[in-house]
Amino acid sequence: MTSPVTQLQETQNTPRWSYITLGYILCAVYSFLFAIDLLGLGLGALAGPSASQWTSATDNPFIGLFIGLLVTAILQSSSTTTSLAVAAVAAGSLSLENAIPMILGANIGTTITSTIVAFGFITKGHEFRKATSAAMIHSMFNILGVILLFPLELTFRPLQRVSEFISSCIPVSTSGNPRFWIGQSFDFLGNQLLTYTNAWVITILSVFLLFGSIKLLARLLYMRLVGKQQEQFRNIVFKSPTRAFGSGLFITSVVQSSSLTTSLLVPIVATGKVKLARAFYFMMGANIGTTITAILAALLRSEAAMSLAIVHFLFNVSATLLYVCLPWLGKLPLFLAERLGYLMFRYRVAAFAYITLAFFVIPFTLIYFSKSKTPEKPLIESVKKVHDP
Image 1 (cartoon, rainbow, N blue to C red):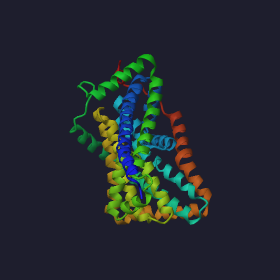
Image 2: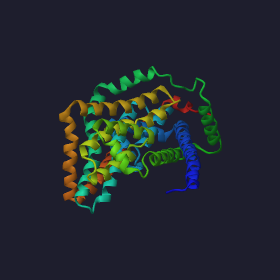
Image 3: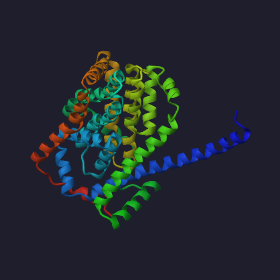
Image 4: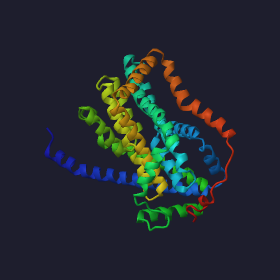
């Protein structure tokens, strides 16, 4: 039994820890938003040969798809990739049409994290089979979603058209309008950095700051939401399909990392505490929740940047509706995940081959050969005027 003195100390320490955590979270959010603004500044100042190669390469939608996949696989964070794309669109160095395939590729690339987590069970027999099945359910959801919706988007542009209509109805701050004090502080700090450094330093710094702020925010909020209460977390979250879906959406919206939340599924499913079908609902909610990062990145930016963020949201919602409204289609990711999990259990080399080929060899090869055949195009002159100090 704890003494009154101990109880008093715990009571006094709890708020202090909460305030410190809240302070860290606010600093991480500010750093994230500043990184987006700084990245736009760097990309605008780099309006030259490098940006021209980027623009010409993404003119091919399939290459844009694989660029998004490869970058996300390397960074292991779709939030970072989508934020980079939003910043590039806001700076004018990447068109909305060219950025959409990158967003879809990022959705596939983010599944590498849960697949790597599954390797932690490689020596545990059938637990490895269940772990790889849990990882594959995330991959199959996104891969099948791209196969179904990407050709439709290339032909009729429904996501782009709807997103442009929605973003036109949302008031978005532009360079010609007064901005909030937080936006003004971004401009001041960014211009000071540009004065004493150069565009390359700013761009590289912004990428590191963006990646670090997302990881810090995810870690802090994960500790507060889940932490050591794994058992209680599992009993509450996976009690029903609806609750699993809603929990996946909410938790991922807060921690801004679908890689983190979907990776939680792997050990839970591997140990048999949650069925794969129930984990599938959580994963679908997480895929929608992760779109909050792009929306935050588009705040105080341009209408085109907001359109890209809405495209990301609409794509994940559309894919989820297809699986939910068409039961026969909803069973396909489960079936493929279970079969692939069994295949990787029987032949462990298949798991290594899947990661190596799907996330690195094939995307890099296609990007490399396409780059050598793609002629460079001159940049639009307006790009050079973005964030002109």
